[in-house]
Length: 150
Image: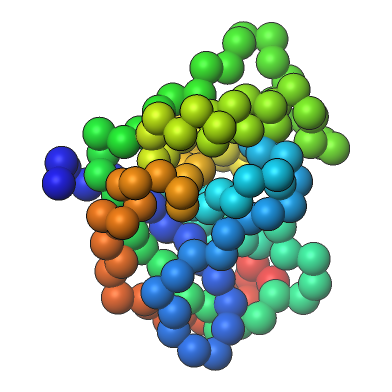
């Protein structure tokens, strides 16, 4: 396996898990037609993503999931300088970029900019890519959400 890229995701729940949730609903970078895993390059960014997408009061008991991904499997999505990818509601032309990447199936990971933090990136992981079998999970880390973030 080539050098690894680390991906992080934060989730809630009482029991540790070694899996990431598949997204099969419309999101910023995909339409929801094909399963994809959203993760972040850094743990702090993963926590902010979790908090930004939370629809209800946050639970204090969280889990940090960490994966090692083959770095050779990363693709940078081509974003034109005028593409309004940060807009909400999510734009179909932006979702089409992620959907096209998934449909090509050439790489395990697409690296996309975070809408929350400049100079940070999120990772789209294609669970149907052959290299997904090489993904390695680190032990899950349980932690409590700081009350200042609630």
